[in-house]
Amino acid sequence: MTDQAEGYTTADGRKIGGVVMEMKNITLRFGGVVAIHNISFDIREGEIRAIIGPNGAGKSSMLNVISGFYTPSEGEVWYKGAKRPPMKPYEVARQGVARTFQNIALFEGMSVLDNVMTGRLTHMKAGILPQMIWKGRAEAEETENRIIAERVIDFLEIQHIRKTPVARLPYGLKKRVELARALAAEPTILLLDEPMAGMNVEEKEDMCRFILDVNDEFGTTIALIEHDMGVVMDLSDRVVVMDYGKKIGDGSPDEVRNNQDVIDAYLGVQH
Amino acid sequence: MLYRTAGQYKTSYASDQAVFPVRQDAILLGIILLLAWVIFPLTASEFTFQTLLIPILIYSLAALGLNVLTGYAGQLSLGTAAFMGVGAYACYKMVTLMPWLNPLVAILLSGAFSAGIGVAFGIPSLRIKGFYLAIATLAAQFFLVWLFEKWGWLYNYNSSGAIQVPNLTMFGVYVAGPQASTIVQYYVVLVVVSLLTWVTINLTRGTLGRTWKATRDMDFAAELIGINLMRSKLTAFAISSYIVGVAGALFVFMWRGAAEPNLFDIPLSFRILFIAIIGGLGSIMGNYLGAILIVGLPVMLNTVPEALGIHIDSATVEHLNIMIVGSLIIFFLIIEPHGLARLWALIREKLVIWPFPH
Image (cartoon, rainbow over all chains, first blue to last red; front, side):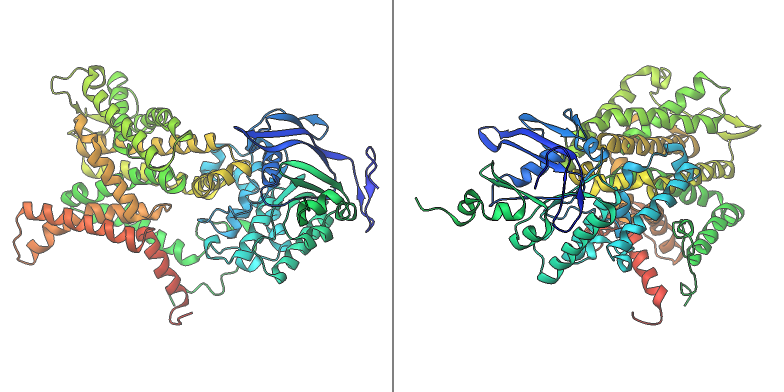
C-alpha cells in the first residue's frame, strides 16, 4: 500500500502526496531516561497520521520533538525535504507547524476571537509604528487576518461565542477553540495532542468530523495522538505504534491491528 | 436604556474592531475629553490643578506604563519609580545640555532613555517569572536610586544633590520652571497623556497587544504558536519603560518643579502599582480610575470634613488615608482582582440590558 516515493491512495480515494516531514532515528534522553529510542517514520502530505501507544510510551515527547519543544538527543528531523537545524519552538511554528495541547493551553484572559487571532500572529508583519497609529499596514492586516480567523470560526461552528472570554467556556468548546487557533495559522502540519481526551461520545463525534473536514477542506496534513482506539483506527490513514519509547508498529490501521507486537503491548503478553 | 446597543449593526470588520464599537462609549469619551480639554481648564482653581488634575494625569500615565508591562504582558515590576527617575534625570540633562531643545521634545525623548534601561533590566525576565522577576526589578529600583544620588554628573554637581527645573519656554511661553503658569503645564501634560494613551490603546488592541496577552496567559503555548517570547517581553519592557519615563519627566518638570533622588524611592513604585491594581490590571481606563481614587482620596479627606464643619487634623487625615487605601487594596485583591475597570464593565453590562435582568 505504501509507495515510498510516490505516495498512495487511501481506501476512501484520497491522494496522499510525498513526504512532508521525516523523523530519522530520533532518540530523546532526559538524563538517564530514554523517552524515545531510535524511532524513524514519515508524515506525508495530506494524510492523517496517528501516533498511539500505552501510557508513557513517549508519544507526547515525540510530538514535542516535532513541534520543536524538545531537541532530539540524536537523529534528524527533515521537513519539506531539508534537514531542520535545531530551532526554537516559535521558529518551527513559523515554518507551518501548528499544534493543540493535551491539557488545554488557551489564553484564558482573552476572547475566543482574540485567541483565534493569535493563531494569525505569525502572518502579521506590520511594524511597530503603523501599529501605534493603527494606520496603513497594521489596519489592513487586522481586517485581512480577521477574515481568515472568521472563516475558521465559521468552519468550527463557534460564531456564537466569538466575543466570549475563553475562561467562561465549557471544556468541549475550549478544545474546539484551541483547534481553531491552530487552524487559523493555516499550518502545513497540524499536530493534535489527544484531541478527544475527556470528551463524551457526542463531542468526540463532533471532533472527529472536524478533523476529517479540516483534512478534506484545507488539505491539512494532520498528526495526532489519541488513546481512543476506535477513533484512531477510523480516522487515520497510517498509524505509528510506540511502546517504552520504541516503535513497534507502523502502517495502515489494519496492518497495525494485526501486528503481534502491538497486540502484546496493548493486551499484555504471557511470560 | 441609556446604554441600549440594539440597532447598532456592524457591517464591516473594521467597524467591529473600532475602539468604541458601541456608540454610547464614544459619547462618554467625548464628554470626558470635553471636560478635560475645555471645562476643567476654564473652571478649575490653581489648587485643583496642583492637587488634582495634573497629578492625576501624571500618575495615570505612570500606571499606564506599568500596566503595559504587568497587566498586558504579565511581567511583574517593582521598579516603576526608578524608571520614572531615569526619565526625569534624562530630561534634566537634555534641557541643561541643550537649552535650545523644545521642552515637549525633550520630555518625549527622555522616555527613550528609560526604555533602554528598562530593556536592560528586563533581560532577567527571559529566565525568571513572577515574584522572582519582581525581586530582579527591585534591584533596578535600588541601583538606579543609588545612581541618582552618587553620580554627580546627573544633577550637574549641584550642592543640594537635587535637580531644579529651569525656566523653559516653548513658542515664547513658559512651560516649566517657576515662571510657568499652571494652566500651560496642565495642557502640556494633557497633550502628552492623551497622545500616549491613544498609542497604547492602538498597541494593546493589535498584534503586539495579542502577543503580550498570549505571553501573559500561557507563555509556553505562546511560544509554540510562533511568538518569540524574548521579543514579546522586551518590547513590553521597552514600551512600558518609555511611558513610565515620560511620566517621570512630566512628574518633575510639570508638577514637582524639583526632585531629590529619594523621590523615586520604592514608595512611589508601590503607589503606582496600587493605582494599577485598584484601577484594574490589563485595562487602559482603570489607570485613570485608580489615579483618581489614589490622588483624590487624600484631597477629599482633607477638604470634605472641613467643609462640613468637622475638624480633623492633618496627621489623622494622613493615617485615615493610609488605612482606607490599604483596605481598598485588600478589598480589590479579594473581591475584584480586575479592579475598578472591571466594576465599570459589570455596571455597563447591566446598563446595556436595563431594565431587564437578562
